[in-house]
Length: 479
Image 1 (tube, rainbow, N blue to C red):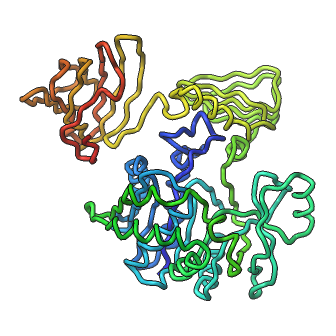
Image 2 (image 1 turned 60 degrees about the horizontal axis):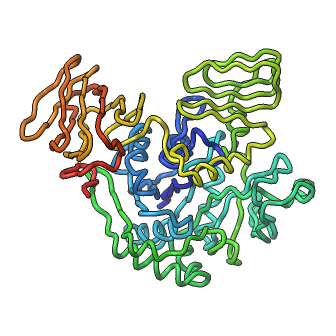
Image 3 (image 1 turned 90 degrees about the vertical axis):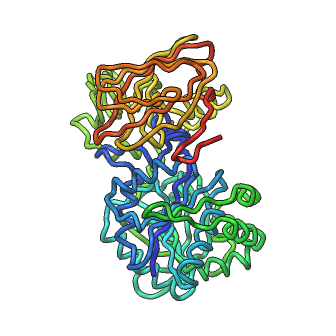
């Protein structure tokens, strides 16, 4: 049995201001409108064998967004198994937990294909062939990694040196792993023909992985075993949800699978691949997905280029015009604009660090924020008022809640709302409104089959999102 395991974690700080902590890189839309996670789900579904499941290991906070992407991929819900982390602990604990959970459900011989959620693979047939080759090596007891044939002396990737060949299709034992090199070293690696880019994708049986962890990271395996034992899966409708116990998971080390195991083991093979792989690790990589004009300018959204060359513009709504500029990247979102030279895109993460140091919300949230029930967008705010646009999905409901410091006025502009206000409930139609005084228990629901869109006007002495007391919540957020 072959089971894809999707790791959906990192924040993608080099892709700010689109990728943020609350809406990270896997949920970013590519120029074709689909997210990286959606594309990964579709790719993974082609690997799945009968009786198996498609596993997603992600943070508890990303569960509902991940589930939405899974449903958008139009895959059978009974194939979904979500393993939810209470906090980030890097890839080694995530993969160990997945292996233990899958061994419990399917036995030692289950083969795992571990794939990050934020990579793009464009040659489907070549990828399927590489996985087939890797799964055969995994059945022989190898830890298998996928190496990408380098096309340039890239300094932003780790490298794998291939050693003794295994069969006739290019697979080899791994001689060594090399950290990101400087340019002269990368040029030597490219010229030698012996080095591959480290893709961060793996294939192995659960038994092999756990045996190797016992040899090279026994404490990590012991802690992961205790954590999974304390975290039984639950059926949530047609899908499976397994929330990892917070106290046990917090004891696990924050370490990558490369450092914990792959670089220590002598039982690692590499399968070379040329399947149009990209980790979409910078705005340059995103730019490469867009067709250029005659001056090598590229754009998604509305842009005008005057006497400009080699630029990339991405705009979510406004017109962006450039005049007399070269080699620039401009990313325009509702609440932040990034302007960076194309040769400095790796330094965008420094912006995120500065925002964190200032505790500025722009490193965490967009102006439009996703919630399990839909989204809200802050349209305007001042010291004593805030105006939001709220969209509630069909059949969804906000929690039964109360605010101490603010009152709310709701105006329905599209669809129908069911509003609980104090002890009573009533339907509010389009172009009608209702008022929620501070201190009243209230709930907003969408009983219809189309999106409910409403404008909320908050007023009061304190308007923070933490002024909320939840009494009931269908998404498990009661505090």
